[in-house]
Structure formats: C-alpha cells, structure tokens
Image 1 (cartoon, rainbow, N blue to C red):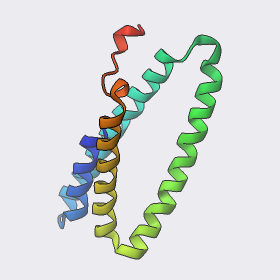
Image 2: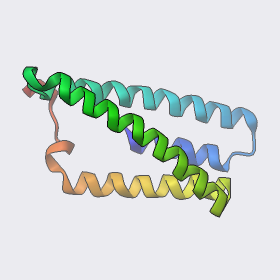
Image 3: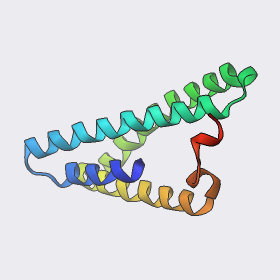
Image 4: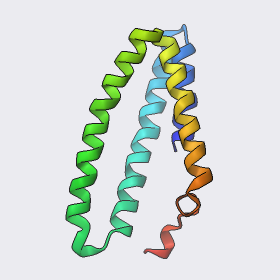
Length: 117
C-alpha cells in the first residue's frame, strides 16, 4: 500500500496547481485509510485471542508515537531541505524501506489472510 501512497506524495510535492495538489492529498488519505484497515485486519487475524488486547494496546502506542515522531522528522527535513525536497526525499526513502522490507520479509510479502480465517 505504501508503494501507492508515495507516488501521490511526489505528485503533491511537485505540483504547482492547487487543484492537483488537493486531489493528491485526498488520494493519499484514501490510500492511508485502506492501509490502516489492512493492518488492523492482519493484527486481528494473526494475534491469538488471549493476547489480542495487549497486542492492540502496544500497536496503538507505537502508531501514536510514530505519528508524532514523523511530524517532527518532517518539520526538521523541511527546515533543512525545503518543503518540496523534503517531500521528495521522504518519498524516496519510504520506497527504499518498502523495497528492502519486501525483499527481506518474504512471509510478509506472501501473507494470505485465508490461512488465518
């Protein structure tokens, strides 16, 4: 899903038109919403019943803190590089991390929800 979100951010970062930038932000929000649902579904399917509450609590803690850290990192990058470069560099770094994860985490890449349903 992140591979679909980042090109939208490139479009937003390079756009000089307010309408195109707005469409890009709406699209990124839509892709992000789908990503949240997919991650939540995987969390519910894979976690054993007796651990589900604890795992959900830890997941919520990490998701909440990662948003705050991401906001800080984005602000620092925008200050150092400028807004447009920060958006492009952030998108490139994210695609690199996604590609590395896809190459190294075969089980995650080949996840089949039917096995857990």
